[in-house]
Amino acid sequence: MTDGLLNIGSTGIPGPANALGDKFSVYDDRIQASRLRTAVGWLPTVVVLAAGVCLLLFLAGKQQAATHPRAVALAGPVTGTIGFAKEARSNSKAAPFDPSLSEAIVPEQPAPADGLTIASQSWRRGGLGSNAFVTMTLRNNNAYAVKDVDISCAFLRPDGSHLTDRTRLISDVINMKSRKTFARLHVGFVNVNAAKARCSVLAASHI
Image (cartoon, rainbow, N blue to C red; front, side):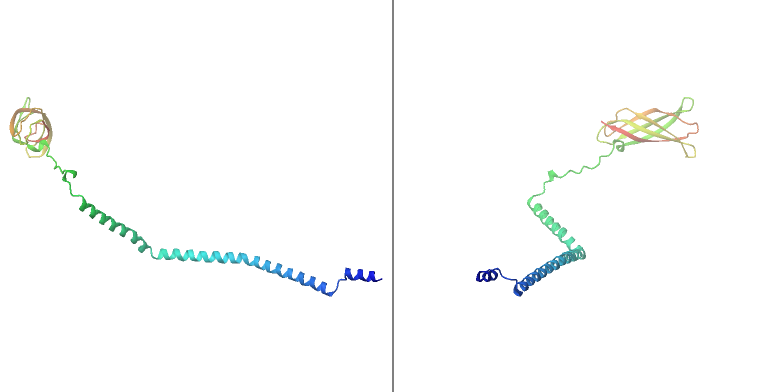
């Protein structure tokens, strides 16, 4: 009988203390689970708030840069220009001017025809009166000989109005600083109403 009592005592019967402990354990688990759910629920809100703060800081910096664009733009070029000016002055002091390196300015040379003048001229009709023959003296004022002188003669009516033009190429050579007379040059056919002629030099070739 004593063994039976001992067996019962060693096995133990669930009492109020064990039941209360189990209830507290379950209650703690529920509290922890509730806190975990609450923390997880707040996580998106925290992420959104952090993103909003970053966006506000980015917009504020961009607005500040847009508010002072002129000062930022002027800072770089002015410094670069001053540096370039200093470098140019230092280079100009270091390297003396060399006239041989500069391009020589060559004045424009006058055309050969500019040095030719007609000292005298006259004309007459030939054949049946439709041919024009011109006699003229050409003076070469150039410092070189010329040839292939191209002349143009304008024929006028008795009242001075223009009638027609004729040209002639003189292939003879005219030496420098000299004159030469060409007699009865046939310049072409003219109208019977032509009464006057005025000739001029158009071009010439340098020899």
